[in-house]
Length: 403
Image (cartoon, rainbow, N blue to C red; front, side, top):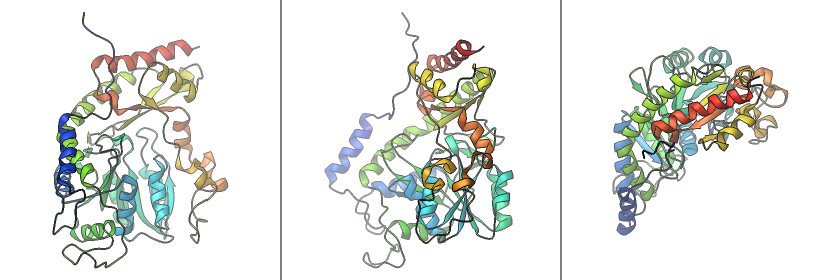
């Protein structure tokens, strides 16, 4: 009898090729990459070349994790004390905390109600004489409106960092994300669509910026100079050889996974939008590919008998569907509300903290977050029965609670 039960893909996916790649690094005894001129190890350098080719960009630098990738990008771009950086309010803490780490001030931008991404219409209104950069987050792997964001950035002479932690291989209007702005940052943390347990990367096309990025992530060194010469501030953000070896084998299989995720996400979107009161993240005009790390879905409680997120989450989880809570909006986090941050930095002009963190100041994200859940990317690597099961489960929950 044919098995028609839903089979949700386990994560991470690994094969004997992954095991052998890491084992080979162990056997060589070359566990770190070394300087560019001596290549003590080869895995980091080769991964950087291969990832740059995949992302259709000139330079790629591997580092310790996605949070550090943003910090490196900010330092390389000269963002520092009391500079303001506009950040999407709906993202993981790291997008905001990285700005804090360089003694700059994040300014939180509300989201578009359809795409759940930074809203360019709101963004421009947040720019002041202190604004130095925009950090746009491709939430769930969905590309932001990068043409509009770049137009605003050019108008006000601002740097642009693309947080691509969710967006490996996402493409917008003919260009890979991470290549629209000055640079793009990536995460290879355990749950990410391309993973080695931990790791990160920064990509760019500008040669001078590339030199600064390398110097920041490798203790202020310059390529080709004596190893114990340090020319500017930097730290040790280098990735290890074993992580890089695993990323190389994972990257080989990733394009096929990306293709399947896009196919299955389109199916899911078509089916969920048929359910009254269900509004999944909209694929904006110009989006050619989406990595779909998470798939945020807003539901109108009026169509579900008034139940809130907690009850929805409980029932999805009880049904065995890979789901999770969405990121809390940054303005709601205690460290920002209570301004428990860096000393000697003036946060008084930020649009958050104390009463400025009140919900009415961020109406779009407050509305969406209150009744939203995320579907995990594993779903989109699963069989058709699993996709159908998710859709039917949400319909059953609605029928059960609808008054």
